Image (cartoon, rainbow, N blue to C red):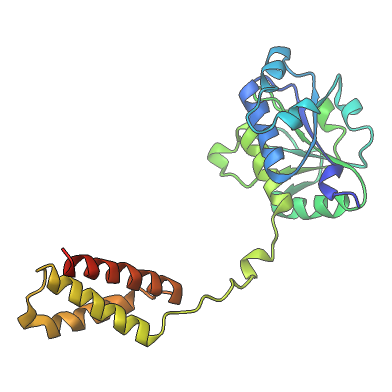
Length: 241
């Protein structure tokens, strides 16, 4: 069965900075996307980016094209990220959250592409003419433009993000029982008395303070056993010094 992530083409248009190209490739590798396509990249930057840390496989398989049209010829859906700016909109605009859901749904059936413009000029109107709609990462108006590598990472994360994850219940952890906590309190008080930190004459009030302190920690059963083992060893050393 084809992995839906293999259906996505990440298209970098006229990229100029090898660090940005490398960061984009690394984000792809992080999230399991492999199809990197570059359109008229700055040649030196593209060659240098092939050494991108942790993303050599993505860079080695990257395909180079002379135009956006050639890069998306096999895609039935083409989407572009945009920072808006002062340009008039000629396409439907969707926020990343909604656009990501639509894109993910499409990728289950057919190839699609996300276009990312150059760091300096963004995407030209001719590039945008290949798009079905635009997608906006909800940055603040005062600083809407994002770094290329960051934009790729945020967009791809939204695609692989599981919206049900925040609702998932963590695996239950067994809390320490009262007898474990009481034994830990006693061992801690004994260690403090043996070391001279606590005056035996006020041992009872100290024990109450320690009991409250131990219970405030909300220890798991496993952690309580570890602490019990550590204090037993400390006491053994104190008794046999």
